[in-house]
Image (tube, rainbow, N blue to C red; front, side, top):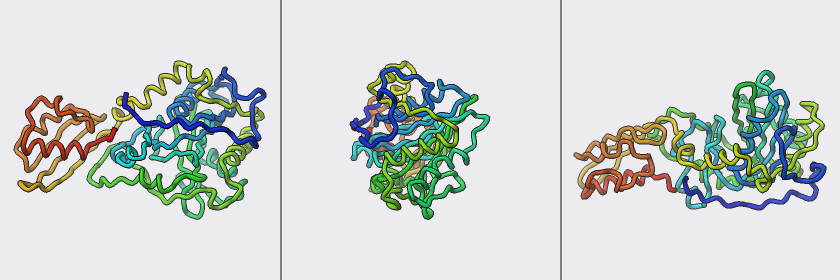
Length: 354
């Protein structure tokens, strides 16, 4: 298990909340409700709960989940964390990153961002239709927003919401972020990565200017957005149920499927081991030579490392080692002098900062 620094943030819903269950949060939760509001801010729980609903809810019924996370970076299922996340900045700020189970690009979550997840039968799944559900909610708050060709919610050409999708068997979902009062400076710091010579076979994020909804209307808040999305979802799908309030303190967190999901997300095998194949070329001038390293890796493991400018077996010794987690003692060769200097440089360039 990778040692991530995750800060649990206790959140209390506003006393003005319009939607509650008949008896408040219940310790016995089933996947048969139409609307779920999670009060947990643990991304490992929320993503695992979402996946549990996706796999276990009735396939023919629409479903809505809304939640917020403590600060974290969430990358797509087929993305490269070394390419997408400023790992040094994330470590400095104590902010973890998580690989989700859907595709799409990298996003930043904090308590100023609200996440929505709309699940429908695969036979009726329409990205445009689900985007319109969210768009109507935003417009109901007095924001003149629209939907772009990628089904992202935009205001004045700036993106306030990014979307991703997943389709499995007879079920599909459209989930996304909604920036309300997010720390955009932190978002920029964590998603700004300068690795132009790293080429990956995975999905690259599409960088776009972003904005917070609260900038355009005083009506906008987390609770107001939640209520508006619930109203829009009910109107679109003819749902009359009250939302089911859930938390990671409920019996939900003891459901085996959710427990396994929460354990898998921060594991090396999932977080790094699912990284698509990539190649990275780097250069550095030393007093004795210019060295070029070409690293080829797949699933987080170095397949090859060729070194130009250094006559050494170091590159060969790196084969089969975990990218970003190389330990000197596992190399099986004596590393000293120039090799030691080059190895220190390579480890710094590959560092996962964990």
